[in-house]
Length: 216
Image (cartoon, rainbow, N blue to C red; front, side, top):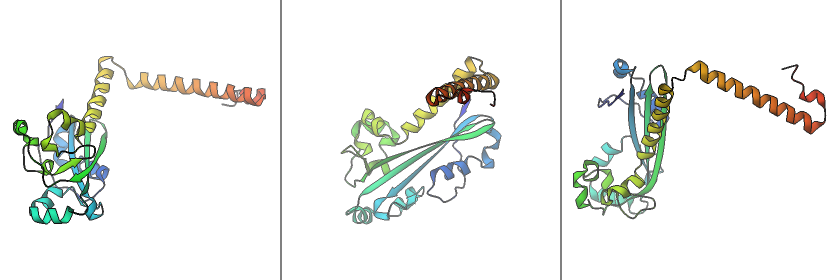
């Protein structure tokens, strides 16, 4: 089961994405669904004009307190920005898996909303997608068609990796692979590597003692 969790929770203040997600996913609010697969998403933004030190995960609140004039003035000389996306996947009886990705770009206060994007809420709102041009493009996110957006989407690489990992788990379950069988294969491969490496070393030195495994 993959559960969608829309709950809000108190966050710590940090620019370290791994720490943010590791701490958040352990909150007691998630205890009732701890035996399911669920994800927590976090997004932070860092501005070159602020020495890449903020506002971090509070960029939405920070952005909303500024007028367009204030923002244009602040980013007129140094518009560089980096979006960092993080996803934490809860795995029952296992440490969570954390995936992060960054998208560099710049602030663009002259972006527009593409007409056909009005059917997509995340590409038609007056949020940061209207003001961020990813590196390699000349458009803000809201000006892109859906194919262009997916090419530059800062979240997509993390979701792709999580889907790949869940697919791996599904394959293991379907094939009834047990931890003991995995351990047996790993130990066998390690043993084969030791024998091969030791034999190769003995041949290279010309010393038959070096190829003996009696003391292993």
